[in-house]
Image (cartoon, rainbow, N blue to C red; front, side, top):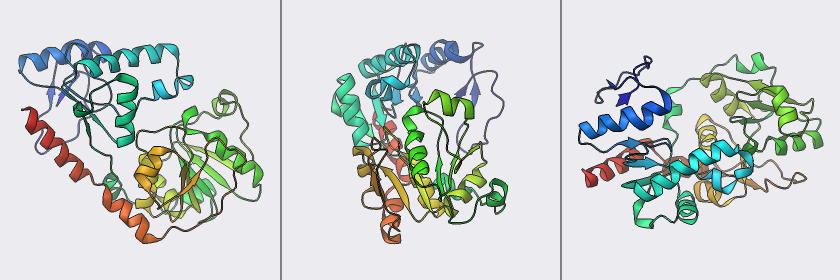
Length: 306
């Protein structure tokens, strides 16, 4: 694992050697120092987070193509930079990894990549097994067990908090809570709607608090417009959420099957009832995805290119 010189908070790996490389930083490191090191090692770079060196992209994971599918949510500068990266990767990467069949089709659609150059290796949820529960979380945030609807994700228009706000407005006797790094002023004004009184913005929560809030909520909500996969609902299921509501989109059906309730993310007047999904259905979904299996699939790919 090659890291920039300023990085100090490095996990202890049993079988991975960590090497500090070069003197440059940030994007200059990504596109100059790192590919120079890879070239000297006569190696192939493995890049798991969308970005790959422009001179030699190697193997790259493109998780989604939101910049093409939902460009209205991004700045022109951001779109231009990532489009340059993706065009370069689409043309020159040895292999492209993505996280769902839906995302594979989208990459082919927008970047005309040959299907055989794209390998689907799904995300998973077992990282949540290492996280405990914080039994003081509900008291800290003024919530009652099974007495609130919960959502957790980053502040992006794509995550569609407006849908949750509209549902909260129509259900003033219900309580809603959203966790994530949220600036309340930006949330209300930047996204074009007001946060109702029965909708709490919790801001940053710890992993243990998040897992507890997922377990103890009435319903976990994920009304996002566009995803390459969608990990939060899997995390919520693994934490113990009995009901999960997600967007009625192609990728959500691919990942979650009949284990969730689907809603139209564009319909802010949508009516849906709280249903408890059978444990067997959720268990089938959780059993379908595992980091160990995804890691083995990645190893097979690496062995083929070695």
